[in-house]
Length: 256
Image (cartoon, rainbow, N blue to C red; front, side, top):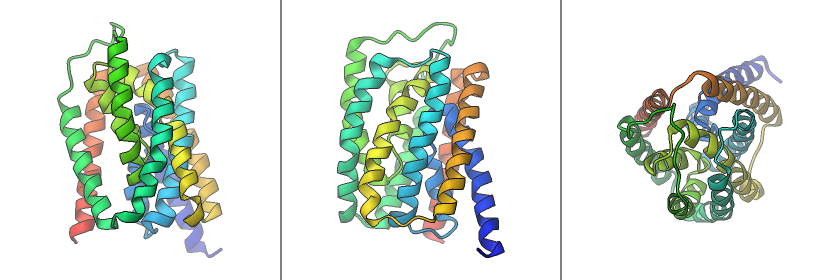
């Protein structure tokens, strides 16, 4: 392998470690930030970026979920039904991908990021000292929303977490509880969409291994840091800023 190739591996591993730390804080899995970053290095969207990003999304979500479970922060009565629904729905989005152009996908991505950033910048008031009161009706609403989220996330190749987490917040979950619960919801849909990509996927196996290791460690540390120190309002604001920056980067890439 040429030196330049190893430099690229090192740079991407370090970058994905940092991104996984941030996504681990929010229980999202790393795909929603890894996708535009990998695109900056010239990888093909449908055949290289999406399969790798979905794999990393799943492993970082598992890593985060382990940390959150240790702190007993996960609402399992919400997490399990949403996990089942989104896992079934995600491959439908992958199937729809064959009918959609790359530019359309990126503009959809930007639109969703900006909408969510706006909603997360002005969240409902939350008190981390008071546990979230979640009713069965709220859980039912979340399950209904998760079917559409699973399809759309499968289409974009980023996993459902970046949509599911703000949806839970808007339904009344505290951001910390939403992040912890979301980390479980993200896992299997990411892998079901990843499997759907396998027939046409192309992998650089050294990059695959190094970024997997870096992402798992980063997500574990990020989730542990959030569980111990970060308040809900801080978390929503960090999330909103991250979404705006990602949208700006993609718009620049599309118009230049």
